Image (tube, rainbow, N blue to C red; front, side, top):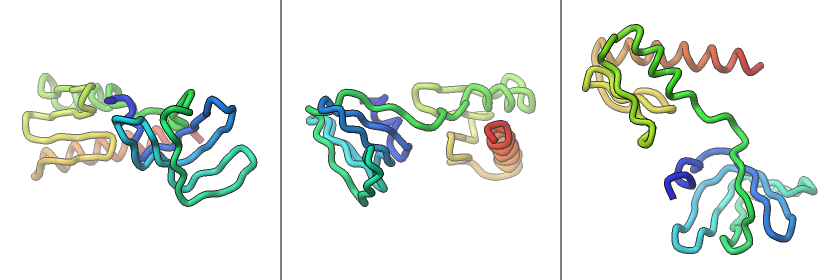
Length: 135
């Protein structure tokens, strides 16, 4: 379930056992049935749908379309600025800096002050560099 939860709000491609394929943003799922909901979805014939519910029993695969965020790379970059004060919690998707600032793939989510501002700058520079390297 953790893996599926990590795909929330990410662009995915879903293939069914009937060889149908849908692409869209995963916006919800039911852990008991594994039904999923895609928003802004398209099928293989390029038909567009605002929302698509795909029953869990017909899903054969779900593929993340975008590269996962390099949390380990960001932690290494932060470690250079804050030696021995950076903790990477990969399972939780969080980096903790100096036990005060928490950063995820979405940016600084907890903390304030000078340390948080420095972490935010490093995060923004890291994201910009990754975006440039992809183009």
